[in-house]
Length: 79
Image (cartoon, rainbow, N blue to C red; front, side, top):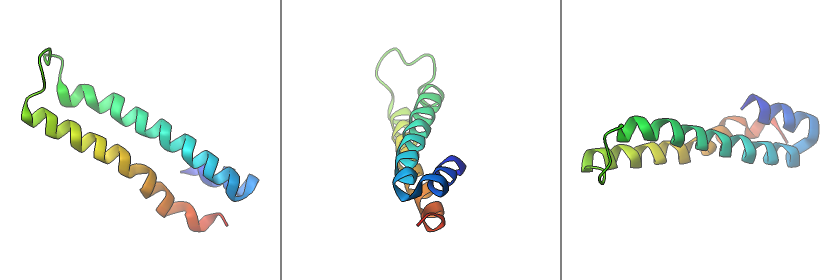
């Protein structure tokens, strides 16, 4: 969020949206990559069981929701 706001203050709203897209993509990648192994566990050689599948969907939902939260918290700071 801080990087997006600072970029927006330095380069205007176009820079803000570019930085927001980049940081959101990086954050979503980090969340999915980190929490996927925690949700599935090391012993999921077969298909994931229903509980693990639910945890994986919740992880993907949380990762997809993060850019919306970042935008909602910072859009009014950069105009």
